Image (tube, rainbow, N blue to C red; front, side, top):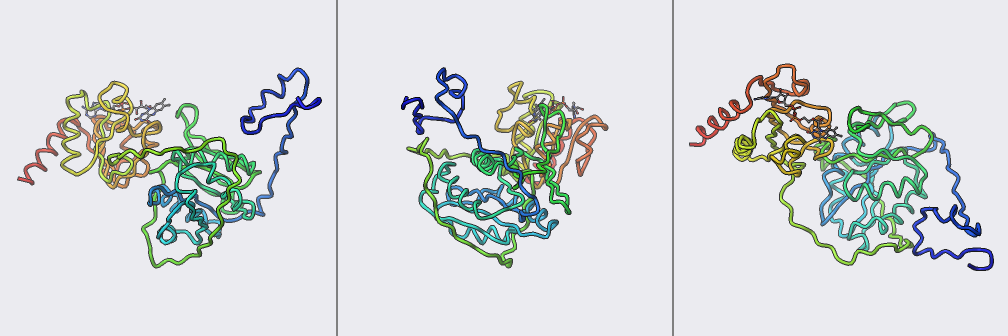
Amino acid sequence: MNGNVASVEEEKCILCGMCLDSCPYEAISAEKKKCKITEPGDYSGVWVFAEQQAGKVHPVSFELLGKGRELADKRNSQLTAVLLGYKLDNHHKELIAHGADRVIFCDNVQLQKLHDEYYFNTMDQILQKETPEIFLYGATAFGRSLAPRIAASLQTGLTADCTQLEIDESSGCLYQTRPAFGGNLMATIVCPEHRPQMATVRPGVMKALEADYERTGRCEEVEYMDNRRKSTEIIDEIIEETAETISDASIIVSAGRGIGSQKNMTLVKRLADLLGGQVGVSRPLVDTGWSEYRHQIGQTGAAVAPKLLITCGVSGAIQHLAGISGAKTIIAINNDPEAPIFSIANYKVVGDCVEVLKKLIAEIENKQN
Ligand SMILES: Cc1cc2nc3c(=O)[nH]c(=O)nc-3n(C[C@H](O)[C@H](O)[C@H](O)COP(=O)(O)OP(=O)(O)OC[C@H]3O[C@@H](n4cnc5c(N)ncnc54)[C@H](O)[C@@H]3O)c2cc1C
């Protein structure tokens, strides 16, 4: 206590607010920021947070630029990529080639590690001067950590894990669709009174544009800001060597419960190997232990965007479809002609998937010999 006033150790305070009600001496008070209602007309432009790591732009950044380009064109506005990191090399050119009109960047050794406290202040500084109408982030571990900090600081909303984004061309209202109520329905969320409208989108959901290296754009450098509260420090970083994940695969052969048995999974793996692809599964196969979680596709698994997806005995439940909307060509094999998967498949095979798999494998093996 300092007289009648409590002194709070700022370094330790996590702003939970519990002490305000529980202090018997009413010695603690907090100034609540009044929530500001923004004037939507004062905001313009679509922004994308261009996440990069270990010298590479994360593929979700290009996917967001693809969607961002569409939204910006509909609003007749600019598409800006915000690129923070260290040794950024030619990343700016790549972002412009994938649709950005402008790249705001900060290249600083402090931004080498993905730490949201380090990134936040620089982002906050940029956003003090700029007023984007829309700001999109990848729903990566880092995007999910940084975006809420920024939304809270700007006193605006954030819709996480969107699977679809549409815009009202005249008002600029962003329709942000995501699974809700345990994935049983798709909810469309709007943020009418606050700007920017912010959303995270999972990797593999949106489509990147073909890179066009003839495109030109503007690059603007900003200074690194470091007045952050040091609540955490990265002492060491261990980067695990990971094999290609199904999110990156260009060919996937996936199995659902209709595959019948764990033994039949060897057929799925064989076809995937012959095609140079990877194995994906629906959730029940992970639940029953026939496959590992890293192969699961869907709302609670990975979102995938392969050039070719062959599904074997997958019904096409809404939670599964949420993970395959980015697939270019889908060949579905199912013995039920009414299976929902057929509504999004490009090629439909009505039959026993085990028999079809055996025939496909034999055919390819024969051609190879
Ligand atoms: C909150 C929540 C999150 C979820 N997240 C996910 C998720 O991330 N991913 C996911 O996949 N699911 C998820 N689910 C589960 C989802 O609702 C479905 O239950 C699941 O996708 C069904 O898997 P399936 O298609 O393999 O099985 P089923 O629905 O049992 O379908 C099997 C299909 O195989 C066909 N079939 C049967 N025998 C054969 C045969 N011999 N040859 C050909 N076809 C055959 C049948 O006609 C049927 O269409 C989630 C559910 C909830 C509630």
